[in-house]
Amino acid sequence: MNIEEVFNIQNILIYVICINLLTFFVMWLDKRKAKKGKWRIPENTLLLLVVLGGGIGGIAGMYVFRHKTQKMRFVIGFPLILICEILLILLFVL
Image (tube, rainbow, N blue to C red; front, side, top):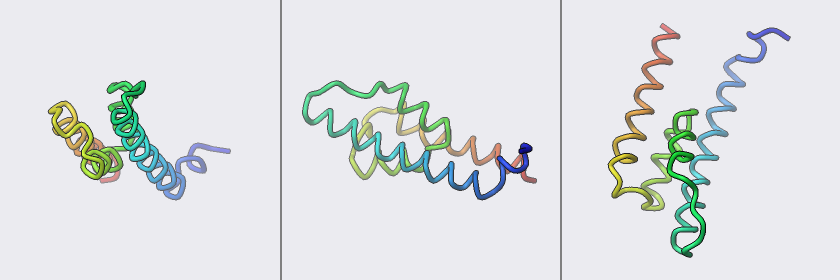
C-alpha cells in the first residue's frame, strides 16, 4: 500500500467528516458536564480537536450548545484555525 492509496480524496473526506462529528459531540459532552457540575474536558483538548481538522464541528458546537461563546480564545481561535487550515489546503492544492 502506498501513500497515494491512503491519502486519497475519499479517505480525506471520511476523516474530515469524522473529526468534525467528534468535535461537535465533545462540545456537547463538555457543555452537558458543565451543567451537571462534573469533571470537564480540558480546553486544550477542545482546541486540539479543532487543530486536527474539527473546526466546523467546533464552531457549530460552540453556537448550537452556547458553549465557550464568552471565551475569546474560542470565539476567535476556532474560526482562525479553520481559516488557516483552509488556506493551507488551498496552498497545497493550487
